[in-house]
Length: 119
Image (cartoon, rainbow, N blue to C red):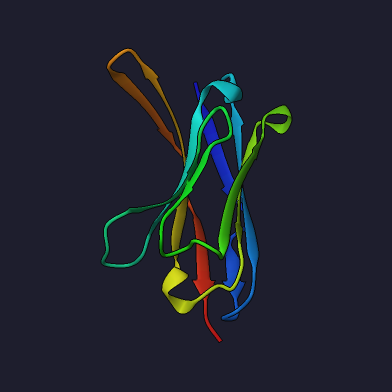
């Protein structure tokens, strides 16, 4: 059973920084592509950043230059470094682990961590 546990959220002032962590257990972490999604009140969940099992990264345009995604396979953990935070970054952030078995997609989600950007 794959389990993902996010941590690192909280309240931060505009312009501040946070680092989110996603600790995985119950699986071979290195086989999965990892992603961070967020959902603001009244909005749909949206993709923020992804990192493949081989380390290739992609960032949504809204966070390019401010956020960075990384992973440490030895620690079974993915990270989202968030700098220059803006009020629009306020959301619940979710960690995702994904892999494909042929045409079948396997997805796992964490419980989410709240990020609030406010003065």
